Image (cartoon, rainbow, N blue to C red):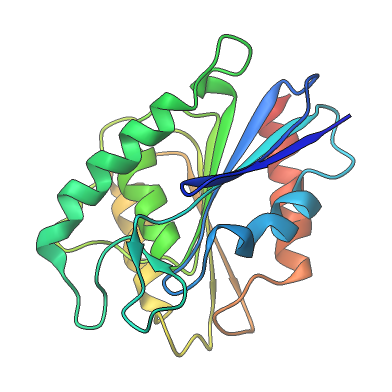
Amino acid sequence: MQFAGMNKDLISIVLPEASFRLVLLHGWGADAEDLIPIGRELTRNLDFLFELVALRAPHLHPQGVGRQWYGLYPPDWLAVPEAINALSCRLRELETPSIPLRKTILFGFSQGGAMALAAGCNLPLAGLIACSAYPHPGWTPPKQSPPIILSHGENDEIVPCSASSQLINSLKLNQLNAELFLFEGGHEITPELLNRFQLTLRDWIN
């Protein structure tokens, strides 16, 4: 049996028998429910059951529909440190005795991917997936981090593919466990990517 809950901060799909958690961070202008189908597909037919948690970004999008982690057009970089700290606190608050952070995987897309890297690299997570992400100005990865998977469409017209190239170079410079998947596509998450991610999840949880 599963229980779905929704409040102003998140959407959760709870399985009482779940032993792992997947946390989803949506992109700029989207909302918490945006990545739920991705989360369902990603955790389908795995050896362990996953609780799904989709966090809602704290700020209203300037057009009045959707949310944002911080202002992006124009970018409000001064708001980023506070946004990262707030997200780190929210992730720690999700921890339970049955599903600690070491059994939690963080998944972010676009602005959510940038936030996932900025907050998740410093937490003892099982793994971190960032799609079509970018580095915040001055961001440097820590000396240690969870295993990281990046993906980016080579024809992305919203976040240039070079952003993920910059990320992987920084991660590899620190000799971190990180991999970048490039694909012929745009600002998206393709079925082929989900298949690759699911294989990686199997490795992480086993």
